[in-house]
Length: 198
Image 1 (cartoon, rainbow, N blue to C red):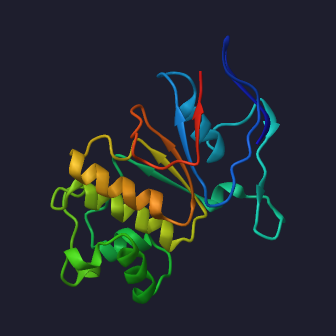
Image 2: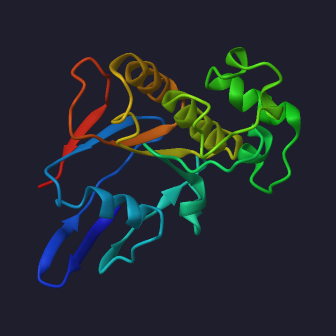
């Protein structure tokens, strides 16, 4: 990112903000409410336009990618699930094989928790599975689509401490670039860099 600027009316969130996020590293964004953390994610996802500056996404070979947002997945604390099978909730209309889906589910530790997992029916936006399982299913969606960057928006905030710890450890163990928003810093978590927004 180079010289990002973003304002809403007279309220300025970013002025000449530049940063290089390195492939595979883990970053934590901190700062008070209203400092621009969610806007930062929205700009990365292409949901908010930049007033100035540019975001450049480079492949391993150094080539730039035009549609960089396609390489980014978002993990939130309340993922939307359809009242359909886990197979449907993973594929979401795309053409994936069962083998590909099972591999993604295995990466997040879900295959051992359900029998015939792809045919398990989700009820009432996931009332019949745990909060931690819902978030891991959301992570599996991104892994299935081979996202290279995960934006994690307070994903474990609504989980009990034990489940929050497990999900957080899973997220930080993934071989992806992780950019996380959290109000409370886990002192034991390993981040390559903590970025304080003001």
